[in-house]
Image (tube, rainbow, N blue to C red; front, side):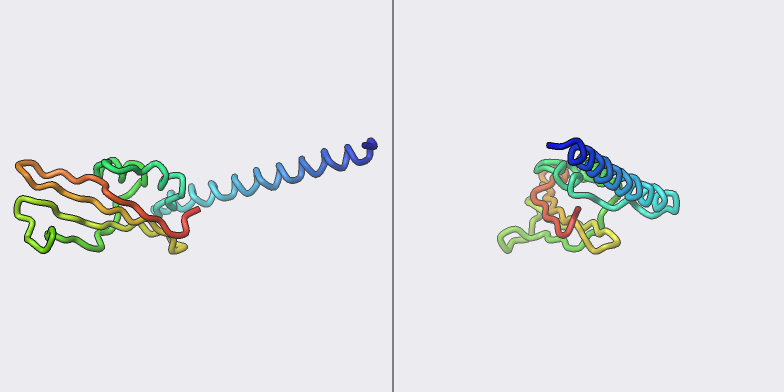
Length: 126
C-alpha cells in the first residue's frame, strides 16, 4: 500500500471515530438536558437486558429509573377469584418516541404479599 493510501485510511478512521464520539456526546447531552428539566431519561435496550425473572418492583424501578404505569391487573387464576392465590399486574414504561417496556408481575398472596417479575417485553428500544 502506498503512503498516500495509508494516510487516507488513517484520516478516514479518525473522521469516523470523531463522528461516533460527537453522536455519543450529543445523545448524552440531550439526556442530561431533559433530566435537568425534570423529564425522565429515556429507557434503553441495555436497561431492558438487565431485567430478569424474579426481580421485585423496587429492583425494576431501580434499573429503569422511574415507576411504570399500571395498565392491567387480574385477581383471577384459572377463572377463580384469587383470594389466597395469585394476582397478576402489568406495568408499562413508555419513552417519548413511543418505544416501551412492559413488565408482568405476579403477587403471591399467602400470608405475605410480594411481587415478582414474571415476564417482560419491549418494543422499539435502542
